[in-house]
Length: 120
Image (tube, rainbow, N blue to C red; front, side, top):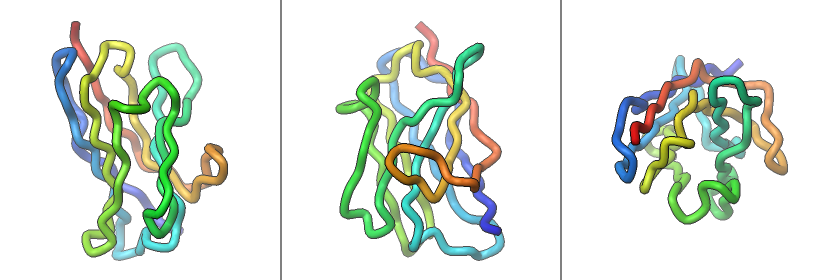
C-alpha cells in the first residue's frame, strides 16, 4: 500500500503563507491517483480542503479556502502541493494528504499529518 509523507507545516502569522508537500514513500507513484488535502482542527471533524485529478486537469476546493489555497502536482517529483496564502487563524489545523479522493470523499490512504498554526 502507498504510504504518504507530508511536510511544510509550521507557525505563521495571519496573512502569511505556507506550502505543504506530500510525497509517496518507498518509491511508489502518485501519478495515477486523484489526490487531496483534508484538515482537522481541535475539537472538530476532519474536513475536505482541496483535490486534484490524477492528470492535474481539474481541481476542487472547499468554499472556505477557494481563492486562497492552490493544489498542484509535480509528477516528476512525485509530489502533491498545497499552497496556502492569506492564512487566517481559523485555518489552524492538522493537514492530511489523502488518496484516492472521489467527489470530495477521502480514500483509504492517509499521511501522518502536519500541524499548521496561524497566529492572529
